[in-house]
Structures are given as C-alpha cells and as structure tokens.
Length: 151
Length: 150
Image 1 (cartoon, rainbow over the protein chains, first blue to last red):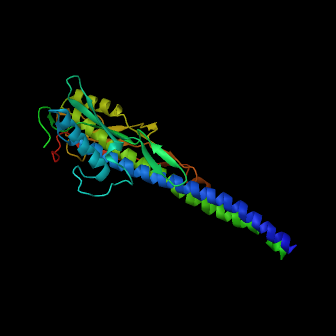
Image 2: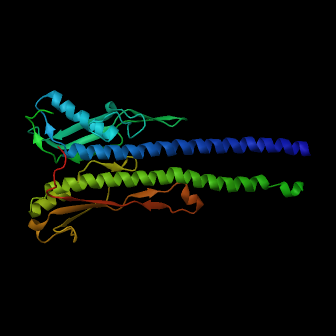
Image 3: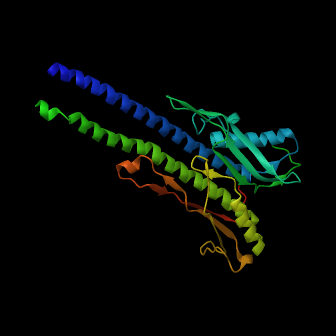
C-alpha cells in the first residue's frame, strides 16, 4: 500500500509540476512582454513629443536625416545627443524606430509619426516581434525652417 | 491515516491554483492595466496638443479642435482599440473648463479626457477581482506654449 502511495505521489507531482511550470512560464512570458511594451509606449511617447516640438530643418536630405536621427535617439536613449548611455528599453536600436512627418500640400509638416518596427521581445520561452506597435502621432508644433541646415 | 491523506493533494492543488491565478492576474491583468493607462496618457497628450493648435479665438476654431481630436490616429489596448467617448473642454484661465465656452476669444487652453478605457480583467476576477477596470486619462495644453525645444 505504501509503495502504491509513493508511486501516486510521483505521478501527482509530475502532473502538478507540468501544469504549474507551464503556467509560470506563460506568466513570465506575458509579464515580461507587457513590461517591455509599456516601456516602449513611454519611449515613443517621449520621442513623439520631442519630434512635435523640434525645429523642422529641410535644406537637404542630410538635414532631414539628422533630424530623424535626433528623434530616434530621443526614443532609444531619452537624449537627442546621447553620450554612451544605455538604451531605455533593452536592446532597442535607433534603426528600429520609424519616424515620418505628415505633410500638407505645400510640403510643410502638420504631424509627426513615430513607431517601433521589427523589435523582438525575447521572453526566453518565446520571442514576440513588435512591428508597427507601439506608435504615436503628435501634431507638429515646432518651428518650420525648410531652408535651414541642421547644426 | 491513509484515509486522512486522501484528498490532501486536491486541497493543496486548489489552494496553489488560486495563488497561481492571483500571480498570473498580477502579471497579465495589471500589466495590461498599466499599458492601457500609459497609452491613454500618451494619446491625451497628443490630442490636447492637436486641439490647442487649432484654437484661433473663434467658435469655428473650437469646432476644428474637437474635429482634430476625433481624428488623432492612436489606439489603446496594445494598439488594437479606438478611443471612445473623448471629452474636449476649453478654458480661459485653466480652472473652469467648459465643453461649449460662451466666449471663444477668451479660450487659451484645452483639456482632453479619455474616460472610457475599460480593460477586461481575465485572471484576477477568478480570485475576487472586478470584471473590468477603467483607466481614464487627461491632459491639457495651452494655445500658445512656451518654446523650450530647438
């Protein structure tokens, strides 16, 4: 009888452990993914607000690209001109931040769109790729200087 | 003794499952609540700035502000749901807010509220939590903000 019970306990442990480990793994996976997503929402929100207020300089393609780079840096490092600091979200790179201005017929920016593209969230058990989310669109309220060059 | 032991695993498992549900609820439901709150805040920030940009001292300007807020292309609930029931209010002094101000030329500020972002609770309701959790957000913006960014 005791031997039988010992066997039962092992089977019960095996079944319970399987259920619990999978529940905990799922909990970790969702929890970590949500944590990273929340950080990304904050990061693109901050970047979008900065992009909305930043002077739009478009003397040449180089100036536009410099503007984009500053906005991307604001999203990734929380600083338009980073000096070696770590990204605010784990493993986020500037090339994973998409920045585009919405323009009127005359070519003046009316809004700026910032979103995350191709960012993998590595939650150990599964990797989720965020593409196009999270994203924000802020109205452009900065100075419009199409003939100026970026410093 | 053996009779006493019978059923123990069932009870232990039930208690553990309840605790596990609570932990899953903390990770899943509370995680979603925080994201929804953050998404709503970023949306209201952008919407308030958009509305403030349209203020020009006329009644038509106020209407354009409301119209612009309705067209801000941002979503919540992990970027899947549109914001609904948005309230746009205007103020001359930043204290008294009205949806239909009587004196449009005096309006200098706009406040946007996203009141109805109701996150459906999945796990925490099994351990006595609510069915839904509402995460409202609001933001205000001035018509002529001080420029701090170059």
